[in-house]
Length: 166
Image 1 (tube, rainbow, N blue to C red):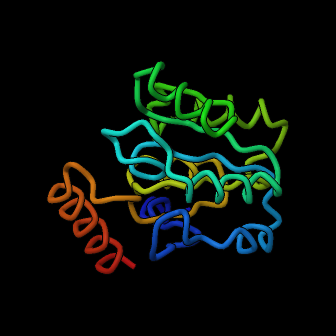
Image 2: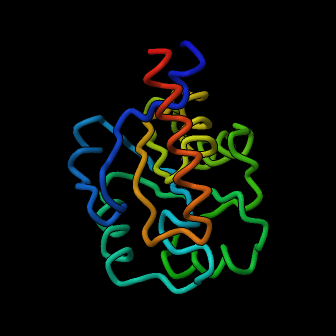
Image 3: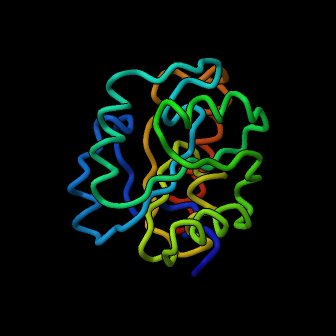
């Protein structure tokens, strides 16, 4: 796979996770899900999960196990979020490193191609998932990110690269 393709999600969803229809993942034969946390499920500076996210996660669980894999190092914060969702979790993932994703896959007893990775960043979530061969879904942040200008710059540069060298 050409290196730029590693930045392309399998599905570029135009809204937040709560707008993602679970049947889309079911149609891809997804049997397990790895979710990013910060700005995907909850704003990076918050800890309380919205009722909409809880309802969506409960639908997602009908497909198979759901794990939270976060680059965040705050074990107490990510652990509290995971407890609210009743999901196993891994902190300090260092995405785009694949090491912690492999740990989650092992915990689910699934192969990468049976699993979806859903996140809001191409350079971390999508790159890591594509490097393993997972079904990757790029979603919009659940709320405007704290560093919104930087995120717009990052996304703009990546989109320019993808258009230029496609």
